[in-house]
Length: 119
Image (cartoon, rainbow, N blue to C red; front, top):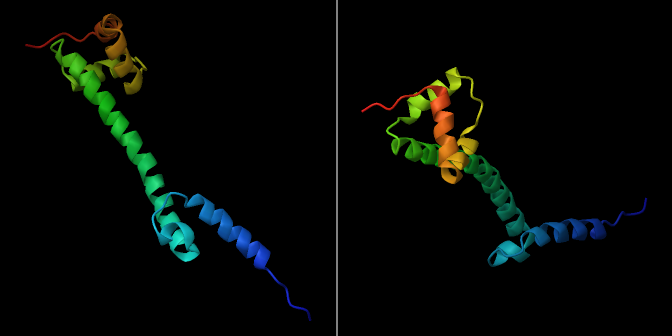
């Protein structure tokens, strides 16, 4: 039985992986074994980072909304509760954008929820 030579397939697989490690340091970019280890690790960090980005952005939106509310003498938790009971379905991203770019509309949204300033 004749032998099957698979050098072409292996080279293609190695080349494809090494192409993805462009910009890595030292052996991490040009030695297949080191590159594959590093690439798996990089993919894991990238996956985790995509989740953390969502968390960080939500925290930023909340901080922006809270700052806009504090200037009106209101508290974040109370306002969000009244918005939900008034069935206002604006998410935190949109609320923070409105608070930054159009404070008058933001004040109208808050007044629609029926929240009054507490001293």
